[in-house]
Image 1 (cartoon, rainbow, N blue to C red):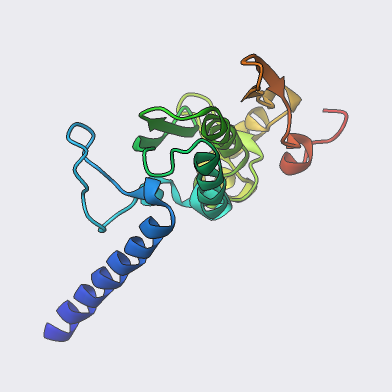
Image 2: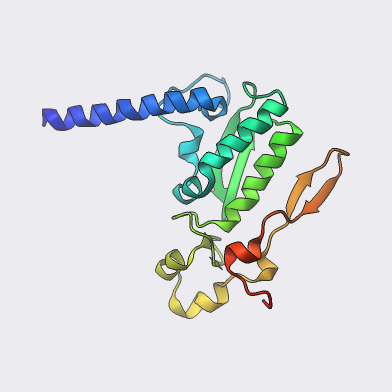
Length: 189
């Protein structure tokens, strides 16, 4: 019994040490109290709030891109998240304000989340109705009844538009993600 408690304690300490170094590299991952701004410790980071599939698919690249954008905006140590969650099948990144470079990165990854399965991180092939989820082939077979699979298959009509903030302060539609290739769509769909 004592050895089991020691293993658990060592595992927790190892996780906290990893989070400490992760937060040194990416200071915006520190979890803080939304109202007081008080640091909550290293037991978790905002990266832990990202669902597993998305963390596997683009979690590390998201942190790198956001850090570069925050450095350009001179907000690396000022930027703070207030919430990271899934809503309507895609990623929602709530924060206390960001510069135009960081805003572009955040919008891009919110849109990119619609390309990867929330459970395993594989490219999506299906989208469900009702409780909206973007799912890969394997996860869809586990979740959706076989008679409904054809109705949930993605088409070109499901390709989202990415909103990009331009230098002239105009919003412009930009298709910089090749959904047809990523989703395995036929050119004739």
